[in-house]
Image 1 (cartoon, rainbow over the protein chains, first blue to last red):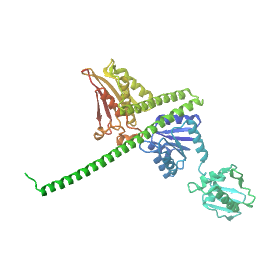
Image 2: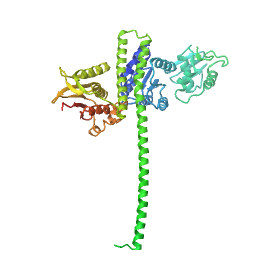
Image 3: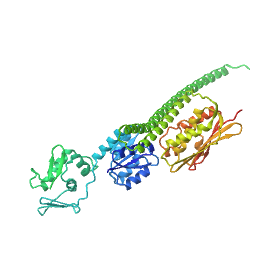
Image 4: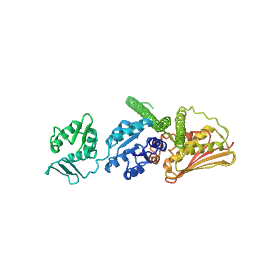
Length: 227
Length: 273
């Protein structure tokens, strides 16, 4: 069950959104102000935070900033009824908000945004320690890779990409997810860059890069890994 | 005394200089007046913009709640009767909040246009105050609020416009709840006073008001720095309206308390003269 934290000092809206999320099968926690929200977000294992911009003691944008400073990459939806919504929108997204909801809104729009943000976000790359396929062996902890016993020189990003694909073995991983998880918050390259990146990686790990057996292109969708 | 030609020349020169100086002063006055008018207009324009922005912002949150609750209930997905009832309670409370808010905004417009009228008559304040307490209790269900009503058994008469007094007490109790934190304790008292008057007081243990701010809290749009910190929302009209209501009743509004130790507002209705 996905867990969502709602941080809003307006009790009625907070409880209404909580009821809407619970109806859809989400686990919900509530916080009535920024400080309480920050504590809960820092300690809890949430899949998404929904927060209001204007709150006493600690505003929503400060909560957003502090979470990001603490290295929490949890998705955040920022809500605001402020007139300068475009300013807030920029601030919210620059500060690491993943989406912006302008008041007034209803549960239909709210739930659609929640689902969209959760869909876009994937779990962090799982901590797979090692991987073996064909004649390739990889130790992710030591960042060591070998093919047919000969050392393979992989970059940090190539290790990350292999680990992500291996964690989703047999499943298609979209180029957007690869950008999110492997390139993280750096300036995004184009999806074409990923194709070039994959071409180079195949040349290192595949016996025949032109007919790959392990790093498979799924047309229009992305890539998948198979042993 | 006979003036010489030189004296006359001197007087003429002095008169011309004085006339020129007066013209300069008048021109300067006109410039200053025009600038002051322009600044005043600009200030009014700024206040108006801020007011519209604040009102619009204030309406957005309850509108979100109402839209969300109605969509949720009409979706048919809320299976538990207890959750449906809770949502309906929230909806009723939110409608009340919105209605009170709009009432204040409209009243402020009437006050500004000097068109707010009162129907002051002999009225029993007892059911009126009890009604306000019930409204706030119902709207705050689920909040950590201890709202106590100290109301005498029998009627407490005063010359009052019941709707206006209800609005004044609602504004005060709303504020008392809004500007309290943690476990909120608010007490509403009603008492008859000597000479046929009455007093209604609303006490809280909230953020309090500094002595310097007491003089300004009844100004339109004014919010104390602590109030704005505690609750960044708000327009600053409630107390202005309460003051107008009490002035119209020939009464008074007294403020007691200190920062961090809560506030007591007392509405004093005069007795028969």
